[in-house]
Length: 184
Image (cartoon, rainbow, N blue to C red; front, side):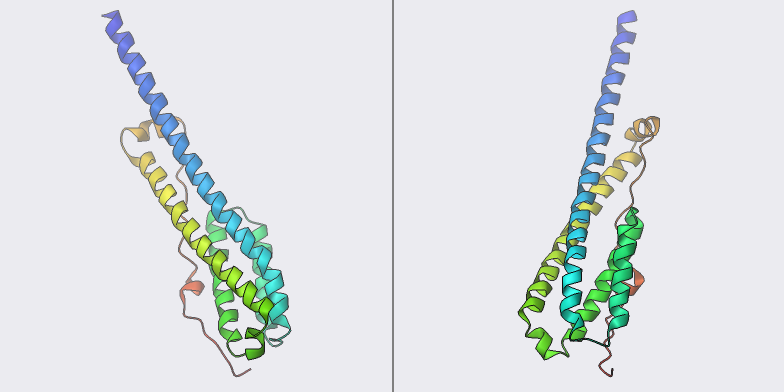
């Protein structure tokens, strides 16, 4: 009888360790996926000053847009929240789309090779951000599902595993169509 109890206890401990290790592995994948987004967002923020300087000479009456970009960069650097970074990312994407759309009205700007190179770099970075977001959200969904499924939710509760936040699509502002005003 003692052996049976010992075997059951050992099997339960093995199961707990196995589930715990699986949860740790999933959490690490989420953190790695977030790091990939962070790297791409940082890359985009590193490109923006050169892009703005290139565009500024041609779009002298777009100072409000440039100020907004500067504020977004500062806000982004001062936050670590996934939700807040997602919101700022959406706003910045929307602002960059506006600049790209307005640039169509400046043929001499479009002919500038520095502008063309930076625009291409930004487009490539935007694509990488999009793929990284998808990978992150997939990882978060798998992790959060493990936290909710029975019986792994028992182990998650014992060791205080917390749900992770999805990287939301974009801000409401970023979902709107880009409004371009050529009357200025």
